[in-house]
Image 1: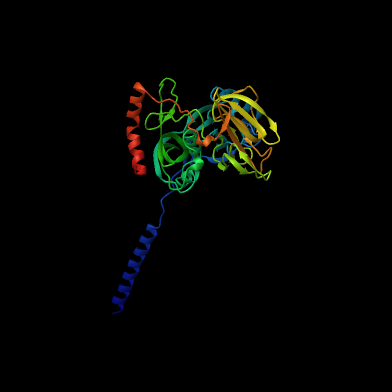
Image 2: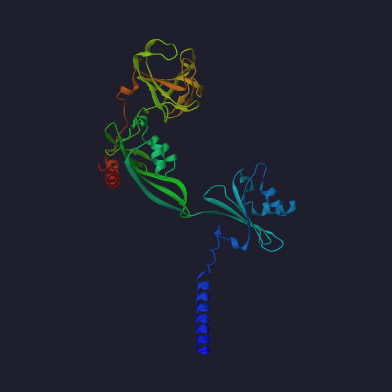
Length: 406
């Protein structure tokens, strides 16, 4: 019996040991993947990441890696045809790769002037070599749309799209839509492409392919089109081939709000009396750029007690516009200005209770309400241009319409 008991105990011990060994084997983790960047395996080097500081130069950076002054001069001469050391700028990143032995010798210097480009200076041979590389860019198409629940910028932000696209869209539609008047519940649709560096790092919007916004109950489309394939200039047109670029912009300021309209009887906030207000007030932070709404010639600049700093632009024999209460005037009398050009900055000079621009409009010498005018529009596509345009936008319009259920 004793022998049988001992044998049973030994069998249990062997089985227990085997199970323990199996558990240990399952806990062994796989080795981590080695990081490869700029074409170099970081596991082969001592790696230093840093940014260019004020006063730094290529010479001072590599001298800090036990490179003598004479060597620095020779290196600069050796690589000057491929890499100009003068291009190094403050606050730009660089990477240094050093040998893993006791000498810790400088092997490679990598400088990144922007997210897409980098320069490599290789010291591993007797003569330094330099070359420029551009990271691969992938374009990804994105379609968003639905109903506006907030501002355009917030809507794009909620869809993880860069804010710069809002400015681009505002510019495209600036002749046909006053974005201050878009309301919650208005429909919209956008088709655009985004850039990704190395297939993963977001690098902004590449191209706006098509867009629409519901504005005052009407759907306003925008499609890019190149009439002259040699120049490659892009203009935007609606779904009927009419240009979105009209004679006048809708407003002199981007991203603002109307605080007072054209009226013959308004209580003046500074003078505390009832009087006519022959303009439209757009509130905006001090220093916001003010743009001329159409091309023309600066007819007047100056200062009056009521208007503060102002600019008046004559566009043709029929129309003139005036911009009041500027903190700074950026044009001079007699100067030719182009539509959308910054002519001054928002302020509160003259009789103003806060920073804004009072936008005044003349037609045939009489001040009128710019918001109620049927202003002249741009030309439409015709002939072969129109035929090519409709063929190009057909699939895009179908996509946009499906987004907004139009």
